[in-house]
Length: 163
Image 1 (cartoon, rainbow, N blue to C red):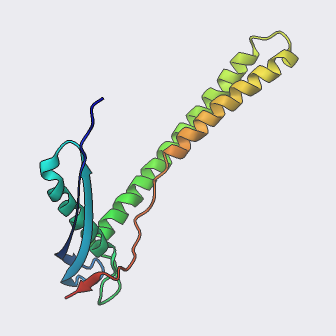
Image 2 (image 1 turned 180 degrees about the horizontal axis):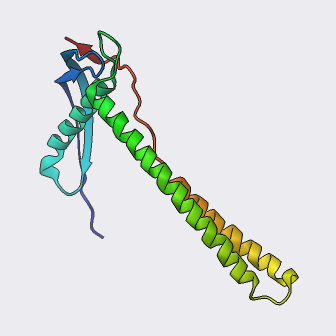
Image 3 (image 1 turned 90 degrees about the vertical axis):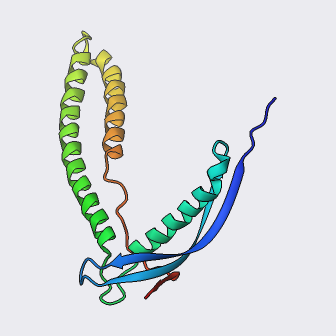
């Protein structure tokens, strides 16, 4: 049996990241100390750079989720993410309504077609019930998966220091 060697690295760094408020337009630098961790079995020569990129990503997210030090408004990056999420939520809602309507029509039409295969309605009941329940659950699962996802949130980070 062979083995796989896994390289791992953890790094910390202090990053100066620009911050711009979407509400009042205040622009400043934020200094953040962040840690990053990376593991890889393929690109062992890049593991340190991957850990540094992860630390920068944590620092960037902490700054963009922090409120403005002057007016407590959101950063421009967070405002753009919120606008994108709202746009996605609207289009997904429209898609879910259309898909749900078409799915219900197909579900009831196929159930009626299944019931017409039987001579007696008493014989058709269990089969139609199982058919309708099965496809109804699948339709509901698809509609739930098409949700907009979790919205971006704004939270202050104690590790962010604004200049």
